Image (cartoon, rainbow, N blue to C red):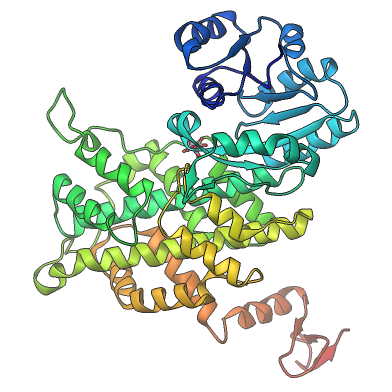
Amino acid sequence: SRAEIGVTGLAVMGRNLARNLARHGHSVAVHNRTEAKTKDLVEEFGNEGTFVPAYSAEEFVASLERPRRLVIMVKAGGPTDAVIDEFAPLLEPGDMIVDGGNAHFEDTRRREAALRDKGIHFVGTGISGGEEGALNGPSIMPGGSKESWEALGPLLTDIAAKVDGEPCCSHIGADGAGHFVKMVHNGIEYSDMQLIAEAYDLLRKGLGKSTDEIAEIFQGWNEGRLDSYLIEITVEVLRQRDAATGKPLVDVVEDQAEQKGTGRWTVQTALDLGIPVTGIAEAVFARSLSGSAALREKTAGVLPGPAASELTGDEAASFADDIEQALYASKIVAYAQGFNEIQAGAAEYDWDIDLGAVAKLWRGGCIIRARFLNRISDAYVQNPGLETLLTDDYFRDAVAAAQDAWRRVVATAARLGIPAPGFSSALAYYDGLRAQRLPAALVQGQRDFFGAHTYRRTDKAGSYHTLWSGDRSEVQTS
Ligand code: 6PG
C-alpha cells in the first residue's frame, strides 16, 4: 500500500517531522539525497510507525497515494528550487508540494505561480518550534490554495501543537501568505530576544546582579504575564555552567549574534510596505553591531561614557520591577508592529488573513509562544479591523500602567550608558503614535524649500508650494 504523505530532506527538521507524522499513525514515505540518512531513520525509528523508504525520486513519487502529498524540508533558496525541479516533472495535476523551510515569501509566490500552471499545488508552509517542535508539535502556517488546505489540513493539524485542545495550525491565505506570516514570526522572535537581552544587560550592568540572580529574576517573571518560551529558555541558558572554566556559559560565549536572514527580510519587507517595525529593525541592527568585530575592537573601552554606570539606593531597589514593566510594554509594541506588517502584507498581496487566528496558532509550538498571545487573539476576535494592538482596551491599559516604569528604564539606560535600543525605540514609537502633531510638518517645509516637493495644508485641500527664493508667497499646485 502507498504512503499518505512523503518527506524529502531528512536533516533534523525533516526527520523529526516525518517521525511526528508516523507517530500519529500516518504512513510516511521518506527520501533523502544521500541514502544513508533514509536508512538511518528507518533503522533507528522504524518502530515508531510506518515508514516507506525510497532511494530515488521516482521511487519516492511512486510510493505516494494520489493526489500526492510531498513535503520538502531542505535549505531555503537554491536547494529548494533544485528539489522542486527534480520532483515537479514526476508529478501530476492535483498533487501537492509542501515547502516547510524558511523560504522567502516572494520565492514562494514565484514557485506557486509556476507550479499552478502545471496544475500542481505548491504550499509554502511556515513551521516553527525548532527540532523539538517538529517532533512533538510545531506551530504550522500553511499558505497555498484552499483545495490543498482541504487535503493537507487534517494531517497538519494532527501533528501540530495543541493549546486548550485547539491545533496551532490554520490556513493563512493564498500562495506566499504562510511564509510571510512565518517571516514576521521570526522578526518578532528577534525583537523578543533582543528585549530579553537588554533586560539582562540592565540587570547586570545597571544593578550589578550576578548571572544566577538574573536567572532567578527571569524565573519569577516567567510566572506572571511575561510567561513565555523565550524567557523560560533564557533561565536555562543563564543557569548553564561552562564545564571547562566553571563560569556561567554566557560569560564565555563570544558576544556576536548571528542571523540567517528571516529577521532582515521582515525589515526589508516592512520598508517596502512602509510599515515601521522599529523594534524588529533595532533587533536586527543590534545583531549587526554585535558582529562588527573590527569596529568594536577600535571602540570598546575607548569611547568615553558617563561617570556613573550603576544605580544605587532607592533607584536601585525598584529597578528590576521597572525593567519587567518596560519589557512587557516593549513586547506589546513589537507585536503591534509585527501584526501591522501582516495587515499591510495581506492588503498588498490580496491575502485574507485572520489576525486572531494567527495569534491563536502562535500560542503553542512556536518560538514566540507566550501567555499573552491569548490577549492578542481576543483583541482581534473582538475587533478584526483593529488598527493597532495599542488601542485595544486591554493593551492600552497595560501600557498605560507600565509607562512610568518604562520611561524610567529608558532614561536610566541613557544616563548609565547602557544600550537599550529595543526599549527606547519601542517607547519612541509609542510616543510617536500618541502625538497630536509630529515634527513632520517641518520636514515637509524643508522638502518644499530645497526641492519644491510641495505640502498639504491642515485648513484646505490641495497641494501648495512656497516661492522660497522669490517673494515667499504661496501658490497652489494642484
Ligand atoms: C523557528 C525559528 C527558526 C529559525 C531560527 C534561526 O520558528 O523555529 O524561527 O525557524 O530558523 O530561529 O534564526 P536565526 O539564525 O536568523 O537567528
